Image (cartoon, rainbow, N blue to C red; front, side):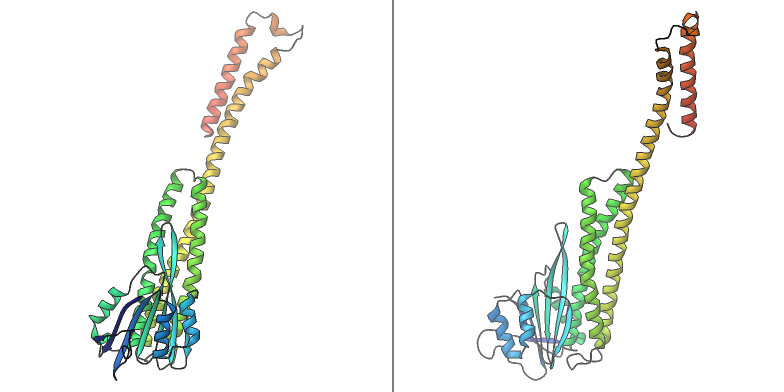
Length: 322
């Protein structure tokens, strides 16, 4: 069975367990609200809930396929919400989906690919019966807030990697693998940003959505979800800018280092050109050259080479070329 938990609640307190097996296992008394959590359910299990709670067929199909962007849709007296979950898997961001069916007396959550169970969330809500007494709409807010809170560890992990890469770029040349990782991280952040946008729009719509499924007193709670998504989005945008600056700084430092090496090579080439030029002149096969018959010609030429080279070395040293 893929039913993680199924309970009926009355006045914010757990009343009794529910069962998908047998007749009457999902019957609710007046004033009771059913909260049923499923993880990657099989089609027959979801069809049982669809018949009992009159879930809309299109919403059921979306929950079975689990390839949706965040959205909120109203079907008669039922609200169907899709939220995207995210977690770090290895060095990449892995995504899942949480589908929520909200009706007058039920809330059904269907998780696909999510690494975080709702068990802890359920325990926290059961410990606050005054809030849980609001009904399924407050549970919907809590589930969305739980999903959005899961984005923070993703951004934290990427932030640590980006900062480490930034420190490394100031000390050494980036390797080809590190440059490829920068572009991979930028791609991951772009995909993550494409999830955050629809999540923010969906939460903002729930804040202003007039439907019997959401009590007016609960609507302001969704504003908190919107704020959380915006903060995560701002951090993701900041990381993209840092990655761009890391690449730019690395390129500038590499150009600077290459320029320094080029200046040193040019300076030594200029110094070595002096003896090469003088030796080339005296290597010519001419009979009439005044210095050839001079007694001190050889030491004078050597001294001139040494003095000129030392002068060039001192000048390049003052110019910070050496």
